[in-house]
Image (tube, rainbow, N blue to C red; front, side):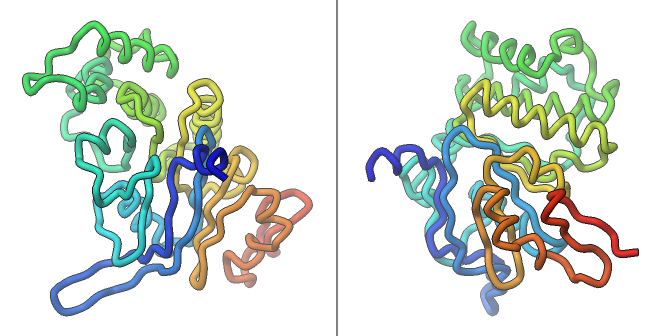
Length: 264
């Protein structure tokens, strides 16, 4: 039992998520339970407005949970300080950069902020981590370029490199393939899969690319109106989880191909 527990990096126990004001509490989802294993690529999927971003914000401690527990590396997230969290979990969000005038190297270097002194001086170890992240993402030739000179796909790779330079056990990405064409959507998700295999890091991402997630993820979290299911894609298919994800008047899930198709 102890050995199994040691491979769990993130766990939710009877978690309820949503928004709370002084007068009212709005529940987005409740009774959320799952365990995420180390070194896996995990996709979070569901219909628009189902609460994927709310769940991610809660898991990264940007938004407080309404009830229940989140356990990161066998410690309650509530008792994890901001600096401790920054050394364990890194984030790639969809918000635009405040300044695209930064160089690629400087942007990736921001990932070392939890480890540098208050002045932000980079030591040899920090520079080594930055260069390793650039190499992993095949960005060495672009490190002197300004971010405004990059394509959307290149900029997304730089943001992932920043998270890698932060050197955390888990990387969380919110819609990492937004604004990318089909080729680059597949490219980014395949790259995330490769990173889990080469670095042993756990990568959790939310996405609308369910077909791609089914093909590439080790585990998927599927959010539905009444419940949340977490399992291997093959098990989710056999349980018929994807069949009930969307109304059947427009698209249906094909168990044989593992993909959705439009009803003609």
